[in-house]
Image (cartoon, rainbow, N blue to C red; front, side, top):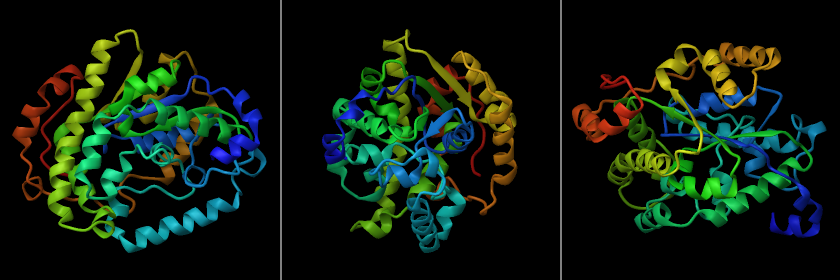
Length: 322
């Protein structure tokens, strides 16, 4: 990436304007929202195949036929074949949009590493490090990627909640969207997912105990950082999605979000979004099942821990398992 920019100084003329960032705790609907936004021809999603193989930048005329797509689909499905349980929990196709974590990972500041390796010292450093340079690099990557395939960026990563000061410093015109869900459902689903990630295969030592301990704390830290930022910066505009409302009427909620930022959802985009919803029903790869007690969690304790968050965003609670 650095070499490409040196050899193509014209990339510096690129401008990333009004990027949309979806952020929220893991398991709060960020993935389906990101997939719907990617169906709008006016948006420019970050695709998995380009995020993991950025140069040369993709070209508009071959954006759906780039040979990197087939390779990524093959690699992704091979990964799910190794760990089929994960496919029912969280499916991200190789030819679809992805999170910003692979790009931030190129700068070695990424929440992805916490889910892949058992390195507590890295976790502690990541939660307090200055992310400004990482987002400057992130912006440079977007400039390169849009140089041949332009568009209005729609992006997402739960980890952005940790670093809103740095994100808004680098992207002062960013449109920020936060997804919210009953923390009881989030915590159980979150810990269960992390017990089934590749970390158990990629790291030494007892992964289950590590995952339960670390990922019990991460959601609270993320929402705490998000709320503190909003208290410090009431001038920064956010749009909030409540999971139960979004799942009940996804198109209506997306339309409301567009309008809150002064945009309109086109008939073409709405049609494409509805087609995607019809082709991608929830649970098509199986049901994600878990028991809170087996994960060392208590519904009452979770509600107490997140009481300020629940009340602030008027979230329904009550589910103990899914």
